[in-house]
Amino acid sequence: MSRLMRAIRVREFGAPSVLKLCTDVEVPKPGPGQVLIGVRACGVNPVETYIRAGTYARKPNLPYTPGTDVAGVVDSVGADVASFKAGDRVFTTSTVSGGYAEFTIATADCVYKLPDTLDFNQGAAIGIPYFTAYRALVHKAHVKPGERVLIHGASGGVSAFFRYLNQAMMFLCDWGHLVGVAAGQLARALGLRVLGTAGTDEGMKLVLNNGAHLAFNHRVEGYTEQIMDATDGHGVDVIVEMLSDVNLSNDLHMLSKGGRVLVVGCRGSVEINPRDTMAKESSIIGVSLFNATVKERKESAAFFFAGMEGGWLRPMVGAQYPLDKAAQAHHDIIECPGAAGKMVLTM
Image 1: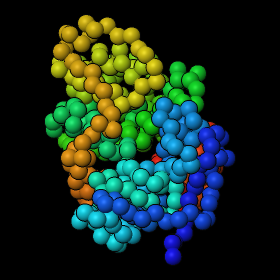
Image 2 (image 1 turned 60 degrees about the vertical axis):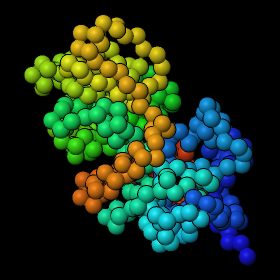
Image 3 (image 1 turned 120 degrees about the vertical axis):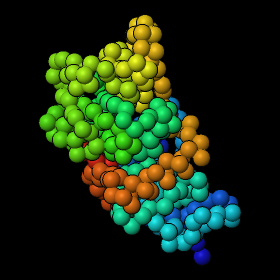
Image 4 (image 1 turned 180 degrees about the vertical axis):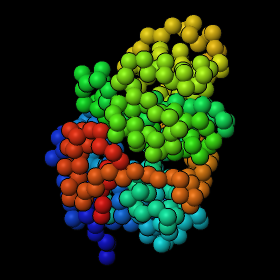
């Protein structure tokens, strides 16, 4: 007899109300190379609201269940899976059947061990933000201990000159907050001199509490000169940039010789003077987690596991909603941006 579960199903694109709780969904069975996970928590990502609305570039086939960043316990595994067994605590960076459900299927190469030092809500907050931050710093910037890194927009606070932007811009700032917090923690652990920016006093405290040695208010006129002064005029070696369409030109002036800008977030075009890259032989490097290889993801996960056990990797959990309040979560993540921490659904 087939087992049944509760799951959110989307049968049409539209407003948050299209997220329907179904109580009679059949529990999927893992195929070769797959893992069936009993979900305890699932992170809610802003991009999932755009997919649900039908405005995202890639649309899933209907009906579907949203959710990628899951934490839970392995229920069973398919053929050819030797790295996991029933009862293992795990988290994911992707799912096959969707994470807004009591059970989900994920391919084994997207599943990672979750140590006892973190709870399931924290496990659901690792996913995309931490893997993106590690890819930017290590796989693309090739940072070295002692280098100076600026995490531009580390708190996700929305500065005064951003307020005209639409909800999609708010999504980007929230994304910057999540990746910025992760990047701050990772950069500190990698032995870097960490500088961060924020737009509020609360944001500045958040930056300092998550790895930064120094924090700067990007609402204050001349804050870029303050950053240069803090580096004795040498500039920063690496900039993790959350809002490149606004900041990229200024970023190039803040770099040291051979400096690198890592483009993590962008909402439009920007004009720069290529000569600004020539004088310092600086680089502008795009970052996309979706290009990471299985080997690179495993390397990232190994570093995170050490951080979880060591206590310095501390995912921030924000608002928590029961599964039947998924529609409210989708409403709040767009209409109430800027809240600290990853929003999660709990089972």
